[in-house]
Structure formats: structure tokens, C-alpha cells
Length: 140
Image 1 (cartoon, rainbow, N blue to C red):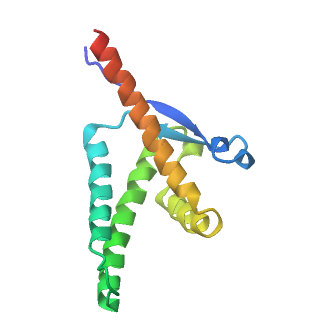
Image 2: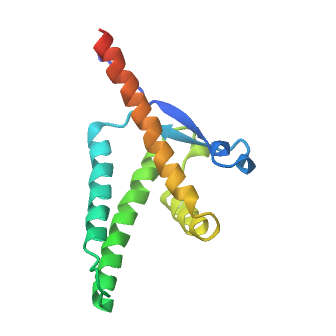
């Protein structure tokens, strides 16, 4: 007999950010494989590395252009990552990469803290699920 662990989803209630979102929910895949979690860490680490390359004095336009291009490439990877993490539930709850790009662009103009909240709480849900697993294993 083959044992399979289902993809586990937890709701991220957008009303926890702002009541105006009403019943809107993002279904977060909280048990992605280790490789998927490591990919997220790699992307964030590379983004942090790029930020540390910004010169203390006024950077040249070429330096800025190069750093922006590197960040764009990583943003594309990050959008793809979140699209997969937010697209494991029913079809009507799935987020395409295009949906996330729109969310990013629109929220940066209207509500810049929304994206950070979504990222933080997505990772919190994944972390809480993993913490529960570790506590359960320790009890065995």
C-alpha cells in the first residue's frame, strides 16, 4: 500500500488585514515539499544580496539598471512561487501569475503594506503547520 500525504490548505482571511475585504480568502498550501520551501528562501536571500550591493554613494544609472533587472528576474520567480502556493485549492480560489502581478502593481499604488502582509501571513501559516508537525513528532 502506498501512503500519500494530501496537500493541506489553510485559509488566509483577508478581513484580518482589513474588514473591507469581507469574506475574501486565499487558500495557502501549508505543506509544500522542502525543495519548494528552500526555493523561497533562496529567492529572498538573493533579493537581500542585491539590496546589499546598492552603493552607499549615488549609484550610476548603469548600476541602478543592472540591480533593477536582477530584482525583476527574482520578482518573476517569487510571483511564480506564490502562484503555486496559492493555487492548490478549488479552481475558483486559484491565483495565476498574472493575478499576482496585478495585485502587486495595484496594491503598491493603493495599499503598499498589503503585499508584505500577504507574504508574512502566508509564511506564518506554513511555519505554524510545520511547528505542529514537529511538536507531534516530538511527542511520539
